[in-house]
Image (cartoon, rainbow, N blue to C red; front, side, top):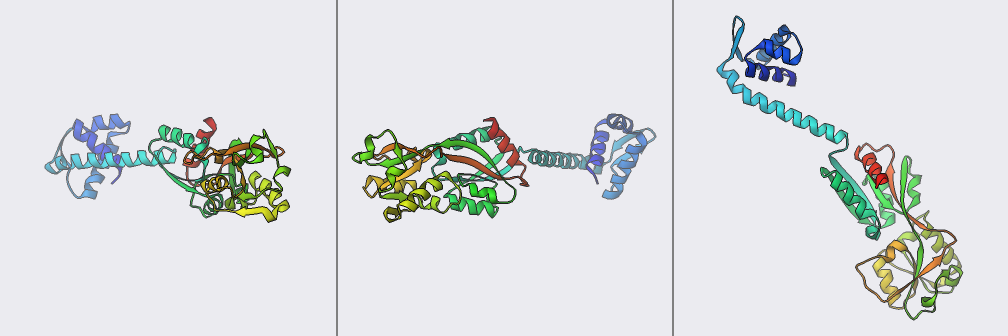
Length: 296
């Protein structure tokens, strides 16, 4: 039993004419007759009474009309869903994102994509850079918003750069740097530095390069911390040291501290937020999302 046979049956049931059904489907009347006969044989019932050039439904045929109609409708609905998924209109995307990127264009990108494609489920997971890297490699995520360029070492990984962010030195209001317009990396060599532990584990990031320079020259004054930016800011406010953070980290809205943020001269280094993806992803929504992001 095929969907085409059911469509032939429903047309014949409505018109009570094999001739009109054949004309509607642009095939011969003999082909319609043969298809209806094959359907009857498969179902082991008689659907039409035939009398010369006239046909009418049997009682069983009348019962089968709503059933056939429901089957055809359900099959067409399923086909539409499959085509929509193939064309990127339904399905799901698993996206990992870096802590603190809530204050970048990340949420706006997600919002606009969701508004354009409401049938697509967006599964979002927030984590630190190293965990995002590992989970992306393991296939947990279709895409990640991160700063870790080491991801590009993954075979088939690609990147779309989104935004660049300068670095700032975070100090208390009474610190000598608080009145400066800019601070150099050399100025920090004798400061007690609070380092973002998550970033120290990464292999390739401007933040890593800046902190690597500072830590190599200033190992005795390094204070480690947990991965949370909020913890770093609290430690600075508590007088435990100063910190170097990219701009998106100091936009954090959920904490209000009396701190000063001084631009750091990094010789051109800026932190870059990127989308990392697998070029050969079997999820058709990945290229759709990336194309939408490029338009935004």
